[in-house]
Amino acid sequence: MHFRRPAWWPLILAVLTAVTACSRAPAPQPGDGGQGASHDGSGVLVLAAPPDVPLPQLDGVEVLPTAEAAAALARREADAAVVAGDPPPAYASFPLRSEEKVILQGWLDEPLSLTLAEAQELLPRLEPPGEPVRGALAAGRLADLRPGWRAVPVDGILPTPQSVRSGEYPLADRLFVAYRPGEDDRIAPLRAALQAALGEGTQGQGEAGHGDWIRLSVAGDFMLARGVARAIRENGTLYPIEKVRDHLSSADLAFANLESPIGVTGRPLPGKQIWFRADPAAIEVLKAAGLDGVTVANNHILDYDEENFLETLDILAEAGIPWTGGGRNLEEARRPLVLEAKGVRVAFLGYSEFADLFFDWDYPRSFAATEDRPGVPAIREDWLAEDIRAAREMADVVAVALHWGVEFVNYPTEEQQRLARFMVDQGADLVLGYHPHAIQGFELYNGGFIAYSLGNFIMDRQDTDLARESMILDFLIGPDGVKQVEVHPVWIHAEQPYIMQGQEAAGLRQKMQEISGW
Image 1 (cartoon, helix red, strand yellow):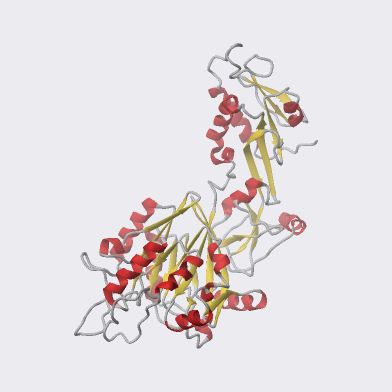
Image 2: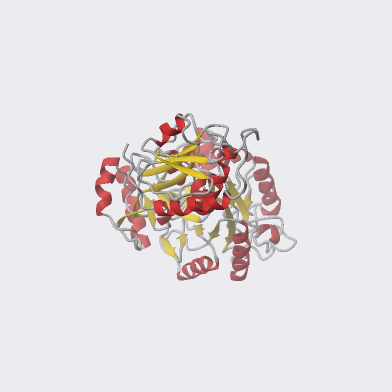
C-alpha cells in the first residue's frame, strides 16, 4: 500500500530518537525467560514502518522499512509495527497520533450537518479560524474549538476526542503502534518514550483532546407547584418532563434551577403573596430529568419558611441530587458543588439578588443565609471573587448561577452585564442567569460564556410568548475547559417543554441572535 507521510512525522522522528534514552540499560540475555528478547533472541526491538518514513538509527531498536508493516509483524519479522487506520484486531496496540480535520461554524448560527463528500469538497476553500462572527466557516482541529465556534458533524458524527480515537469520525487519519498480545512489558520502553514526548496522544486521547470530553446540559427554572402540580395530578408525575427527559438524562452532567421548595412542612412567609411548595412526589421529575445538581438560590425556595427549606434539602439529599446556592448556614450556602464525569470536574456556585428582601415588618425573615441561619447567599462582589477562586482550585470549569434581573424582558440590565463580566474576570467560565421568566441574550467575554437568562423551563401560566420561550444549553467540556456551546430552542406548551425543530426552532434562534447582537 502507499503510505502518505503526514506533516507531523518530523515530531515522530524526534520522539523515536528519544527512545535511546530508554534503551541504555544492558540488553537482556538469552535465558532470562524471554523478557526483552526480540524475535531472534538478540534483545534488539524490531520496529516495522513504511519505507517512506525516515527513521534514525536507534540504540536497542532496529527499524525494518517495509510497505507491509503489519504483515512483517504477523510473520514475526518485527516486534512492533506502525500501522495506519485501524490496528490489526488480533494485536495489542496503542495510538500514536491522530490528525483530524474539523469544520467550524459560528456558534449561534443555524446548525450545519455535512456528508463526508460535502465536507471534503468544502475543506480546501476554508481558512483557519479567527474571531467567530455570524455566518463564518473555518477549517481547523479539535484544539481550535472554544466558545464562539462549534464543530460541524460529518456523516452525523460530531468530532470529539472519543469519536476521533474510535475511528467513528470520518475526517481523521490515525496511526497506531501494533504488537503481539502479552508483550506489553517489552514494548513499554517504546511506549513510554512516545508518551513522554507526545503526551496524551499516545494514550489515545487525540492531539488536542487532553482527555475525554463530556456534555453538560443546563436548563432553566423547574417550578413544580401551582399549575404544574395540577398538570401532574391530571397527567401523571412525569408529565412535565416527558418530552425532554431523554435529552437531559443522556447528558454526562445536567443542571438546573429548582424554583420551588418541596415537601409538606412550614407556613407561608407573611406578606409574600406568591408561595410555591411542591408535593414530595415531584422529586421524581428531577430524578427522571437526570439532574446531577441544582441551584436553590432563588426568590421562592424559602416561601414556606425555614422548616420547609430544610425539608427540601433533605428530600434532595435522599434523592441523590446535590445542590449549591443554599444551606444550613452561610458557609454551606457558599460552598461550591463539584460534579465529575469521565474525570472532568465542573464546580457550580449559586447566588440570589433577592436574598436580603423581606415581606412583613412584623416577621422580617429574609432568604439570606447567615453564620447560624439557613438560607441562600446574596450577590456580593467580595463573596463572588473569593468563591470563584476557591472553586477554580477544585475543578476544571467554574459555572456561576445567578437569580437576578428584571422579569419579562429580553435584555439584561447594565448592572447585570457589569457583574457578569466581573465574574468572568475572576475566573468563571460560565455565567448562568435565572429568574426573568424570559430568555435573554448571550455574551462571549474574555474567554467566558454568559447566558443572562435561560428563561422558564417547567413553569405554569404561559400567558405570553416571552413565558413560553426557553432553551437547553449543551456545553462540551474537557479537562482544559469549555470547548463549545450549542443552544437548543425550547417551547413550553401546557406546562410541558419540548425541543423545537425545523423552522420553529430557526425562528426562536433568530430572536436569540437579535437579542445577543450576533
